[in-house]
Length: 253
Image (cartoon, rainbow, N blue to C red; front, side, top):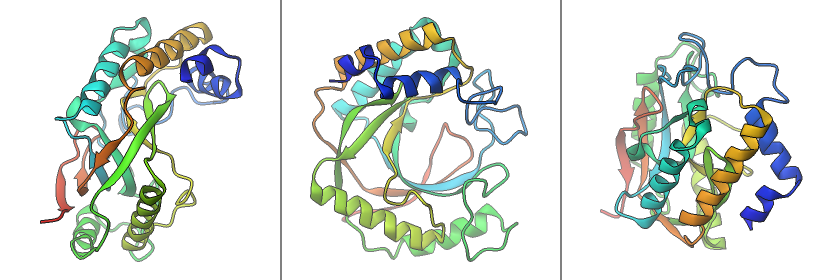
């Protein structure tokens, strides 16, 4: 159980605490945090920065218990003393990323499509992806399940069955070819739903308390969730991490 994992001196727990404290980082700020113009997604005060891109996601249906449980867990985290070290994402933005397209400030800092010259604008790339996306033949529904927080910021998701695992891998392989972005983690990528981004490093005792509280909140609200049904797959273009408007989706209709 995750609760016992959080209380034990396990390797996994040590990794989480090191990540929260920045023990293995030489950076002043946590990942994705920077001053304006520094290439991050948020400032250290939690303000969203311009971080344009496109992506392929499954939005969390707001009419499900899973969405309600995510909201309750996030609200619980907001009430903790350490909450000032995090910036929390808007509830309507909750999603599971299937495959990242091109993004970043500067554009392409997280991978560049092989067929486009450096300097090509986001709009041109998005329009190309959009034409291809509309012609894809892919599984239209997948099922996953939450398996615990892999940090206080994120809920780790895994396929609900072997059939879903094959479908998710097939979709990622197809999107890799569609985008021309070939990632080393194509088979090992950990699906997740993000609740927040850490904006400042924590002291060790505070990190331990925050992780313990996060696992308690998970046990209270999400441990009973056995299956989450996702679909349709959405292709989105975005400017910040607060909003992911869909340009197209793959559906039965």
